[in-house]
Length: 548
Image (cartoon, rainbow, N blue to C red; front, side, top):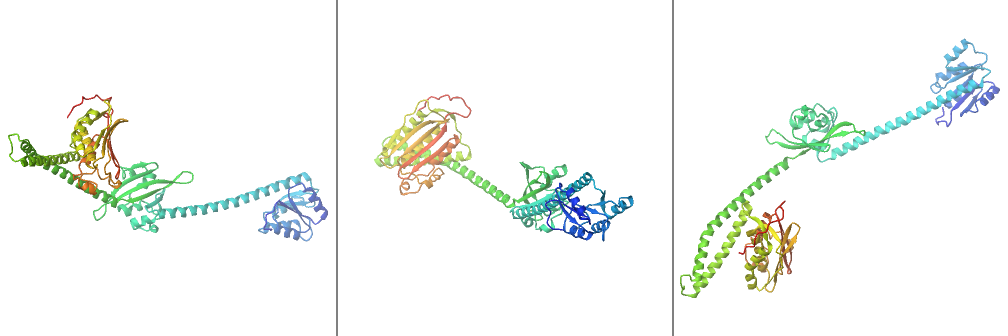
């Protein structure tokens, strides 16, 4: 049989009479088929072995090898046994010969003289059958090829998926719908000490043994079996979209539990049908222990800080009592309340004592206020305050000091309607500390400016100077307790570094914000934003201005 597929069906006609062959060819001309002729049985068998015939029309009465013998030999050969044979005869049309023909392998009998309509109808049927058979064969081959390709693609996808899962840094496993392990990656091998070869294909909750020491559901089972038996093992779970997450401590023989966090989701096929579940397990033990250590350290730091605050508060109270006495008696001596002191140096020295005592009292008050703020015990009395009054009172306090330092002091005009929702003592302390710092770090001939600007839901209080400025890398430090910028100029000014820290604490208590802008050698602008009204409160009611 020819190995190449024919472009059209092929018909074999066999007859020892050339005239009959010519007549048959003419009858078959309108069929879409190629016609091959043979004048003997041997020639017919030779052609049948080289071609895939759709039909063979064979004359029964032929010399040497009759039609029956040709049909029998074709039926016995694997390459030709499926070729339909129709016998053509004029002399052997009785039932006995018909029976012999069918036994030899014929599918039909046509008597001579041949009726063209009958012949062409039967030929057409067998050609259609041949076409259908070949279409089916081609479809079968194509389907087989597609199946083979699909199987290869599935194997490649499975290998690709296995490679990806193996390379995941987290311990990961996949189970099918029956709870049998399909994937057990390298990280899972390292976590459990169980090789993948010993776990793949295992079911009956065997994958739980390395973790719990007994057979029980894990989080992946909950995705496949959300029944009470599984749910009771995970009463507290988090749901994040299609993923469920749970944490739990797993006991160990040494008494130190291992903290594990599992995340599980279903695995679906291309049609969206659930075929299994995947679970990734994270070992949180080191993180949990670090969190516990950080919590312990924070609690220890809080205890130490509270102890420091209590100590500072206690010491401040203990120091203030004798210090107030020193201030009072030095003032009596300095003012010569009970008569002349005799030598003029006594009054001068008494002045030194009084100024030093006043400086020390201010320092103690600052320490006490910071301790109260850190301990959450600073009590503030909020009310609506006219900003112009606050500025006027503080200006009176700093004006003399600014003049002594030969500094210009400018106060921007402030509308009487501009108000703050604040504690009066605290807001004055804020403005005073900022102004004092500006005076302290501005060389003679410089300028200090105070301004208040109405903003959305609040007021910006600005204190600007033309002083030495703050290095950019130190701006974040200056609002911390006891922090000062370190340069030749600041070292001559002294101070504890508490003023700006106290300002920051008071601003925070008011729900405000503090911002520092500075350039070395140019100056500094400190902006404090404070609310103009309490939260969710109608327009504030102004409080009359009080002079202090």
